[in-house]
Image (cartoon, rainbow over all chains, first blue to last red; front, side):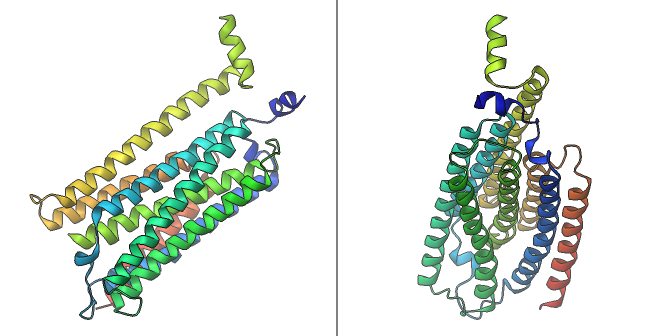
Length: 202
Length: 109
């Protein structure tokens, strides 16, 4: 019986095997490195944010309502990936899949809004090569957006691969790490909306 | 009592696990609501006309710092046991990040 099989799973299936624990450590070290990557982009942006070379400035462009909606979407997607990990505590594979699907949908809608935002800015005259401010802005936001896109692809691959499989100590670490990565994307966004958008319009 | 037992068997968790799950869930939901509130406060503060720009900037930075800690320690479970190395990794990354941002901001003019 499959119910009996799942009931023998340990409480923390993602850390039950050496492989799972190694992946867990590896991902955290990776996130430490990612922090440094984003730091270089943040530092560049903060240094160049007033170098607009006569082009549009941050104050003219940024619309806070749109950024607020994007922030809430990403924050809610962070919650849904937490709920997926909570479903893992209940050994509920259907719940994990369901919450990760919601996470991917929210991630994609965030990306859609970001593309719309870039489209608007481009039409307002802020092209990538317009000014140092434009280059730094698009590189920082684009790198974050690429991380969101990668996360969506990663989680989608996990969902497709494990759609009809039971939860076990082999796929539990994969789901857990995807959720950690997703939270990290949200952490970076917290600093983007604070340092780029909110400080940009003050 | 019998019904309660049945529920526990169905959810495939022992009583201790069930209690731990409930308190963990509560913590996650509370911190989510906290983060939403912090975000709204930060946006409202920036949009208001009554606060000086310097204070707004400091306020936004403090809000971001609080959210950062909430994300790491609650959503990413950094506060749970067996997270010594992840703690070292992420805070080392954070210190490097701070140094990097300060030096870049100082170098560019």
